[in-house]
Image 1 (cartoon, rainbow, N blue to C red):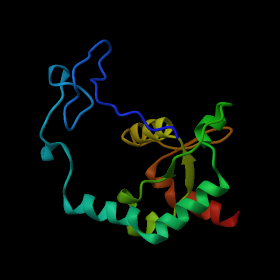
Image 2 (cartoon, rainbow, N blue to C red; image 1 turned 180 degrees about the vertical axis):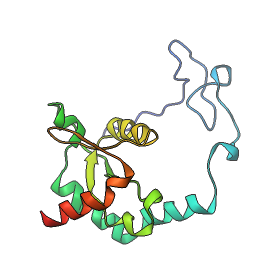
Image 3 (cartoon, helix red, strand yellow; image 1 turned 60 degrees about the vertical axis):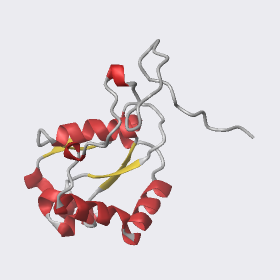
Length: 151
């Protein structure tokens, strides 16, 4: 039976040193052997958000979304076929309130497209992938949700 290869070597091209404990690189290429808690947001707000994504309701909703739309919407809009791994809220619920966590427009995205969309959100652009793609602002949430409720 095949096994998953163990990544024990540094990921820097040509380096044969052992990787560090908490990083994919050796100590010479920026690895670290201790967990740096300052690098991660451990606030109560972040902990609450993590709990929402662990809830049974979210897991069911995620499963339904991925079964209905298993391919990345962004890649499909460009003519590529990629498996979706993430369920994206069109409008970030953290800016709109708790209700927007479940009352939102969801789209299935691959990891790289989800990262791109997150970068767009940092510039206040909320992209709905399709043909054509539509960009929204946070103030458009109410009107867009009313429009989608009619469909």
